[in-house]
Length: 477
Ligand code: HEM
Image (tube, rainbow, N blue to C red; front, side):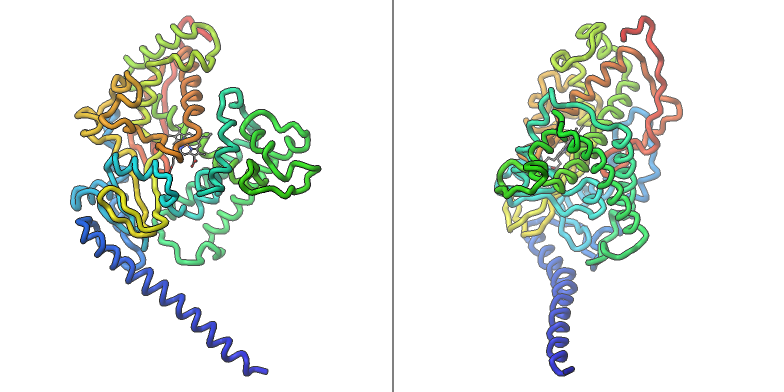
C-alpha cells in the first residue's frame, strides 16, 4: 500500500524544488542581474540590487535621516523629507534611474512626455502596480485597482453618480467608524511598507495580520450595515451608493442572482462593498487634505485669504453656495490648483508593464514598475518656471493648460482614462467648505504649528494643522 506514495512524494518534491529554484535563482538572482544589464546597455543606471531586499533598506535609512527635518513655516521645499531617495538617486544617476523594491525593478521617470504616454496609453499594457496587501484591504479591489473589461464596466456604472444632483451624504456615524478602521489599516500599511513580503506570509497569523483581518471584517460589516437599510426599504437613493445598488444583480428579481452578461452594466454585492471602501477612503482623505493645505497656504498668505473672502462675498453675499456660483469663483479655483501643485495629496503614481514595452527611447521588460513622482514633477523648473517652489496662484489665471509649459503639467488628479473620477466633486466640496469658512472666520496658523509634510501614502502635515479661527464682524451666514 505504501509503494504508490513514493513516486507521488518524489513528484511533489520535484515540483517544490522547481518552484524554489524558480523563486530563488530566477526571480531573486538571475532576473535582477539580466534586467540591470539590459538597462545599463540603454544608459540607465541606479543603486545596486541587493539579494531579496532590493533597495528597501537604503530607502528606509535615507527616510529615517530626513524624517527629523523641520521646515520654516512658508518654506515649500519639503521634497527631501518625503522623497530623499529619489532626489539623491536622480542627482547621482541622472534620469530616469532604475531601483529595486525587493526583487521588482522600478524605473523612476521625471519627464512629462513619458508620463503622458504611459498615463494616456490605451494599450492595456500599462496596468496599476501590485498593491501592498494591507492597502488592498483598506481601499478594496474596486475601480482603482481593476483592469480591462471589469474596469470599463465599473467605471460606466459609477460615472453617472458624479453628476452634481447625485452628490449627497450617507450615514455619518457608521461612516466615521469606517474612516477609523481605514486609518488604522493605513497605519499598518505604512509601518510595513518597506518590508519585502516573503511569499505566503500574508496568510501567517502574525500580530499585524490578525489585526488586519479583524479590521477587514469590521469594515465589511460596517459597510453592510450602511447598505442593508437601503436594500430593505427598496429605496436605493439617488447618490453613488444608490446608482451602484440599482445596477446590482443580486437586488433584482426578489433577491435572486440573475444570469447576466459580465460586460453589461451590473455590479455584484461583493463588488459594491469593494467600491464603497475605495470611495470612503478616496472621497474623504484626499479632499480633506486639499482643504488642509489650502487653509495652511491661505493662513501664511493673508493677502490671498482676503482676496478670496472678497470674491466669495461678491459672488454669494448671504446666499448659500450653489454649484453654479461656485464655478464662478475664479480666484479660489486658482488657489486650489496652486495648492494641488505645491501640496498634492497624491504622491507617487505607479504602473507596471504587462508585456515588453517601449516608451520614448526606453525599452521596459515585462513586469517593470514605473514610478511617476507627482510632487517632484510639480517643481520642475523647465515646466513651471523659476518660481516653481513659490506659491503663485496667478500662474493658473488662464486655467490649467496655460499654467505650465506642458499642457498636462498639473498631475494631482492624474490624466488619461484612469484619471480621478472624483475631481469635480472634490473641487466643489473644497470650494463650498472654503467659501463658508471665509465668510464666517479669518484664520491664522497657531504658533504651535510645526511645518513637516510627511508621506503617509498621501501628503499629510506630520503634527496636524492647528489654526486659530477669529469670527468676523458682521458675519454673513
Ligand atoms: C483632492 C482630491 C483628490 C485627489 C488629489 C485625487 C487624486 C487621484 C489620483 C492622482 C488618481 C489616479 C491614481 C492612479 O492612477 O494611480 C485618482 C484616482 C481615483 N480617484 Fe481621486 N482624488 C481626489 C478625490 C477623489 C474623490 C472625492 C473621489 C471619490 C469620491 C475619488 C475617487 C477616485 C477613484 C475611484 C479613482 C480611480 C479611478 C480609476 O482608476 O478609474 N478621488 N485620484
